[in-house]
Length: 208
Length: 208
DNA sequence: TACAACTATTCAATCGATTGATTAATTTTG
DNA sequence: CAAAATTAATCAATCGATTGAATAGTTGTA
Image (cartoon, each protein chain N blue to C red):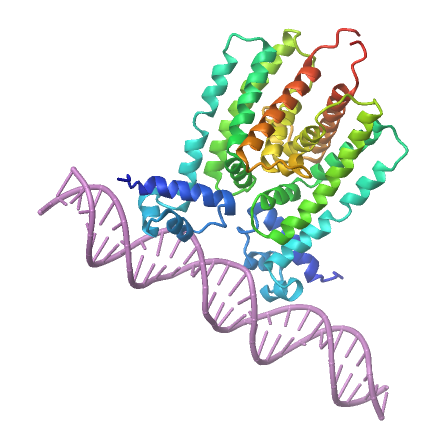
């Protein structure tokens, strides 16, 4: 027999609707209808529509930093650390591009300052960890001296770009991001590209 | 005496509000109030709220392709062409990051299919032009063979990333994207980074 | 065990406010 | 005067939220 968990049902439906229609574009009535719950359940469990949004974000954000920190403390070379971080980051985002779209979208709004700060801070933490890895690599002479923050923008921007508009990669081909096999291929290609890019770009030029 | 152009006032106010609050988050009453026009003027001139949105997009999109095509036909080396395109693209987007945010935001929604297609097609055209430049460079042996589409995602993603979250670059410094001088510095840094990245990444490795 | 007290969950109905849009009347302009 | 531009007033629809009541499940008590 099915475990009726309205709370989870609401979160699931809300995440899907927020992803498709945006926060403002989604009504609490839609969430209720799609989740099979009564409208009041939304306020009963989460206090408000914004409460639902916050809950979704909180659940997703949590865990991001730990994984990252763990890698940064591994016994690996600077390049290995960096590539591992990038691989994890890319995989995580590409596996749930809809959510990433939503976060991106709602975060470019000046609205919802509380959540805005929460996510911003979480992201800032991630940035610092990655920045440190590259800085250490440069100091150790393993990497060329580069504009570290711009390079991070490049890595994150590439991943984000592929997640948000995969058509840039697939158009004119038979690839379809909605097919699991193709999606895996694209993720693989993205990671391979970033590894190649970072390796070529950061490896010191010995013959000059 | 001032030329009273309500139509232009409405467009101006709407673009600012859409940028700050999103399409769904902006009401026609706000647009009217901010532009100093009566609510009915919106429907009188543009038919509907969506009409206003479309008008804004149309005006902005137009002109993008021409500039690009013009460069691609210049008498330049492949690398010079590519760098010029990137510089133009970065400057254009960074000079109006709010608009870019809005386009990004509303385009990741499954809503408004008509505008969606319009912008998508315009962007697809831009992609093809850039792809051709790189392809020709590779064929001519001026560039290393790389994953061209992923590289384009990297370039566009970097620019987009800096435009959308400049704090990634400025945090912990005295730089402020809202100050014109700093903004110019950041644009300069972005372009320099991309030029360095592309040069290092695409230049064939001669010693192997 | 049995019955009362209590808590958590669910519901239909409805709140006042706001939404995008339209109307009909008025003013401005040429 | 006639057309274009502008206005206030109003439309039905929908918004997020709340209400008070009903139901189900748990706990306390004797």
